[in-house]
Length: 586
Image (tube, rainbow, N blue to C red; front, side, top):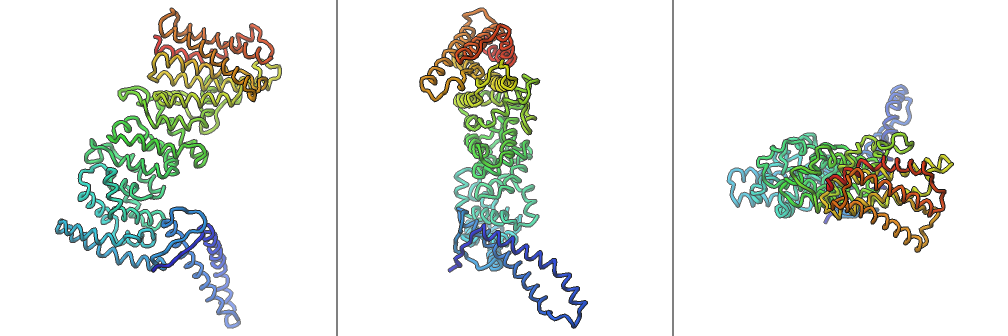
C-alpha cells in the first residue's frame, strides 16, 4: 500500500521560495560567521551553532527537493490542478523511485538484446512483458528520469521503432489513428508518458535535448501524440520537423500522419500553438501553407489545424501581445503575395473549416486591419494609423487574407457580419462631417476613414471569391452600405423598436438600389463600364448621406459640401470597387 499525499501546489511553491530565501540568508552569514569563530579561537562560546546552521541549510535543501518531487508527481497524476491535490504514491521519496526505475530498466535492456538475437514472437512477448513493469509508475518524474537515464536515447528510440516495425509496419510517415490507439495501450504509451514526466519536470540531460535534432519524424510525433508533452518540447519538435527537407522522409509520397499528429497535439495545447504562431512565423507558415494542406494525403489534417487555430486565436485566450502576433503570422502566411490560398493551381478553398474558424474569431482585430488601410487611403487624417505591431502589416496582405476566407461561403457571411458589427460599434453618425466644431468634424472623418477602409479591404478580397453574379451583387451592395450607415443613433435612439425597424428598412432599400445597379451591369443591361458604375454608386452614396443627415435633423449640405463628400467616398472605395466589378463584369 502506497503513501496517501495531499498538497496545495500554490502553498507548497510559496514554502519552497521561503526556504530558498532562508538558504540564501544562511549562505550569506556563513563566511562571516566562520571567520569570526576562527578569529575568536577558544573564546568563541557557541561552536555548536555552526553545525546547527549547516544542518538547517541542508534541512531546507532536502525539504525543497522532496516537496518539488511530490508536487511534480501530483501534477502528473491528478488531471485537475486546482486547490488541494491528493493521490496515493507508490514510492515514499524520489530516491526510492529512482532505485525502482534502475531495477526495472535492467530486464528491459536484457529482453531487448534477446529479441535482437532471435526476432521471434516469443522474444517480442518477453520484451513487452518487461516493459509492462513500467505501468502505474511513469507519472513519477524521479522514476521516469532514472528510467530514461538507464536506457539512454538510442535504446529508448529503438524500443519505439521495434514496436512500430512489429505492430504497425505499414505506417511509414507517422502512426495512423488506429495505430496510435494500439500504441497508447501498449509499451509506446508507457514510454511516452515516462518521457513527458521526466522532460516536463526538467530532469532530462542534454543528450535527450539533442534527440529532437536527430530522431526520425515519426518517433518525435508519436511522443507528442501519445502523451501531453510540455509546450517547450512540442515547439522544439515542431520547429525542427518543419525545417526539415520535404524529402527527408524515406517515403515522402505516403500520407503524412506525422504532420497530422503534430497539429493534433497542438489542438490539445493551444498555449504552445499560440507561442509557435507568434515566435516562429516561418515554421508556422509551413503548417498554414495551402500546398501543405492539400498534399498531406490526410483529409483530417485541415480539421485538426482548424481546431488548433480555434484554441490559439479565440478572443481573450493567452496574453494580448502574443495572441496579436499569432494573428499577424496567420494573416501574413495566408495572405502573402505568393499564397496559393487565393488562386493558382490548387483552386478555391470552399467548405474550409480553417476559413470558418478564422472568420469566427476575426472581429477583435478588424480595427487594426482597417487602420492600416485607412492610413494608406487617407495619410493626412490624424489618429488613424495602427499601433505596433500592426503597423508592419501590409494592407495588401490583409486584403488577400480576406479574399482567402471569402472563398468559403459560410466564412464570407461570418466575415461580413463581423464587418457590419464593427461599423455599427464605431457609430460614426454621432458626428456631423462638416460640424463647426473641429473635434466633431475630425471625429467623423476618422471614423469614416476606418469604416471605408474596412469596406475597401473586403471589396478587394471579394475579387478572389467564386460567387454567382447574384451573390456577388448582393455582397458588394452589402459592403457598400457599411460606410454609409449614417443614421444617427444620437438623434434616433435604437431603444425604439419602431425607429430600429425604420432604420433597417432604409438600409435594405439603399442596398437594394445598389444591388440592382450592379446586377444590371453584370447582366449587360447597360452599356456602362465598371468605372461609370462606380461613379453612379458614389453618387448614390452621397445622396444617402444627405438624406440621412436630413432625417437626423442635421444641417443640410451645400453643393460644395456634397462634392467634398463624393470625393471622400470615391477616394476610399473607388479602386477596390472598380476591380471587384471588373472581375465579373468585364
